[in-house]
Amino acid sequence: MKVLVVDDDPDIVEAVSICFALRWPDAELVDAPDGATALSTFEAEEPDVVILDLGLPDMNGLEVCKTIRETSQVPILILTARGGELNKVRGLEMGADDYITKPFSHLELLARIKAVLRRAAAPPPGDESPAFEDGDFKFDFAAHRVYVGETHVQLTKTEYGLLYHLTKNYPNVVLHKTLLAKVWGREYINETDYLKVHVQRIRKKFSAALPGFEPIATERGIGYRLTPSGEQSSGV
Image (cartoon, rainbow, N blue to C red):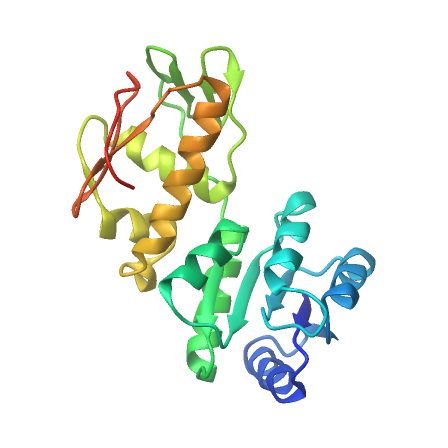
């Protein structure tokens, strides 16, 4: 496994190196102290996971995240001193798979890295049951494909997993904690920001395929449910 660590603080790079040495002693770490070096190193080294700081000397780490995500689905874990819900949401919107604030413990970082790698390696959920069709919405479980009308909606693995569990539980509401546990893992059951960001992404993709189509309804404070008829919902 090859790991790209993007941080201008050598102490952080060393801490991340220790974490990987404890769990994955054969992992190869390469580091980059700034955004430009990170992007060139990413292209040259093709790492299996990226650990990314936001406070880089030459550019915002969010831009690095966005640029990488435009061409790759490599797991990206943001490791930064910038706390707060808004910063976390922005990081997730740019394509990060996880967000950890400094200072951090080795155990926390190890757990999050393991979870990110587990999700990346897991096959998308699916089965041989008949495709679900209702109105313009179609979910082909066997082919792992989702359509609105005749348009194939391109989803990330996380977005696909989220929509899969909503479809399988239609027409029932699926609780926030249930979705988080099934898609991200039980250690993420309180990370509702992760859920909100990915629901918003799914909505945007369906709306782009069929303007005004709304596939997910919000039950505020409770969870989400599939709305294949495209009914409108309030909130996020």
